[in-house]
Image (spheres, helix red, strand yellow):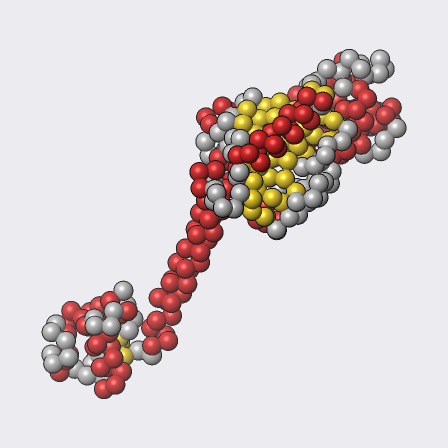
Length: 310
């Protein structure tokens, strides 16, 4: 913007008109070399009005430019924040002097988690404990901006059975199974939350089974220890599958098909379409299964079924 340059003809002429008031163009030859061209610019950008030209009040003339600059600054700050988070999460720029950093807010943790979701390339290993931390705004695998890479990434997740009553857990479980190479296992109790991405970045609470702050680990030796910890829990956990051989004999094949969909986290509407039934019939069968399990909610049925029937 020429007006922001201290030595510009536009600023010089605008200052002159402020100090001297309305002035015919022919009297401005001593102020700037080409007053007609300079006036055209000032008129076009709202700094000068009238004939003879006079200066418009500066705060009125400059408000649009100030507003645009403020928006540009906000966008630049947001870009800087996003790039900084990417830089911090990248294994390629880990500071050797600071092998561990802290994530102290839910917003910071969600941003890093979402970034790791999008950039995972080789392997994703995760232990999920109660209490479950929902990651609002985090990207699910099917939303990855690089689906080819996402489907090459092996994803292994161990869930505590207690968290299965949370519908967001079922959404995550379903997304894991849809991600190429996704494997899920269950266990009664895990020592702590843990996420390891590409053997290069690990997230775990500062206190076992805590929530915040979370430690983000870049040090290879420390990550190797976390990998050993994950593998130990993975070996002990029970693989998730849709084998319903342990279900009560009173459940007919249609019940079992519906149960599979319930455990997968689908809605009655989706289940009705998959099972070629009506939502009302699906709801009635699910209610009957809740009664058989001695539970009152859908989440409790999922928890009971995964522990006792699957």
